[in-house]
Length: 353
Ligand code: MRU
Image (cartoon, rainbow, N blue to C red; front, side, top):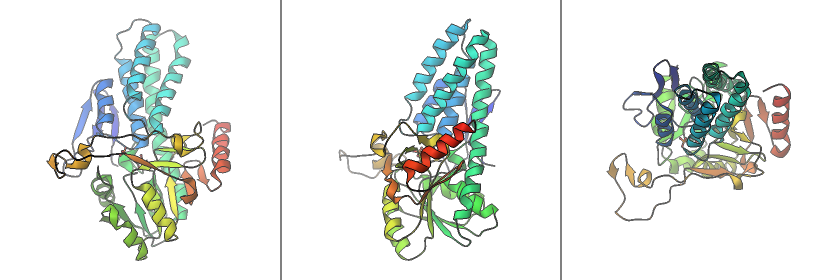
């Protein structure tokens, strides 16, 4: 199993995704601000993985608090939560995890025992980690049946083990679910400029898992679909508005438009923690703008002329009408999403989580 992130007695151990596939290097992060920096710099990335990292970072920071009262601990915790919230703006799992850690503290503080509250916060972060692993398995169970035997699935970015707590992933969880049900599946991975998550990460983890993978550059997707080589598209999500509009890695929208043109089903796979019921549409999703060097350079090598203007939005929003279904850990939502998503959400809350 690929270990994206791990809680250890010495700190939080993370696979440095910036160096893959060339180097498999693990970093040991020993303070919450190192964790926040790792999220910002994309040592760890992918919406669910960012949520898990934030929860663990908050637990680590709280457990290192030197405050002697629960009130001191609360001050530290709230500060750490604010810092975590400044790392990346689009993936809602980050804010979901921060809220859950805050709420856990609020419930635990009546114990009035600093050491006990710290233990509860660590246990909560570990629960978030375990729940994410289970959610991905459930996505695979619900989504696997949607993929026909002998299918070729196109995916964009990396929504696999590396983008989650580990193991299955979301979009790749659907592919693994189909594979584990005995189907023969091949994958086409878009390279995913500018950070190259498809080329570097999806190809790496699928090859490691013996799932046949072919890499294409992003501008080949239309040609490949027109040639009849794609049976389904499955992508992950960073934030899904209550009407089903979905923010995911830049380029996803283009793939969805192409899939519609070629009558190819376009599936989004994500845990319910990626659903933002407070937003009516994708218009309200904040889109992260990243460093222009990601576009002008490949690692440290400059490709663009000096001084050119650069725009580097890290995500785009695919409108709900282009999405065939949203595969979640709690079941598959179909259009109209303004009905199916609130229903799924309400059923899950009624069932206690
Ligand atoms: O910028 P990144 O690499 O964090 O973006 C990741 C994506 O867009 C993924 O497709 C998404 O988070 C789903 S991950 C299961």
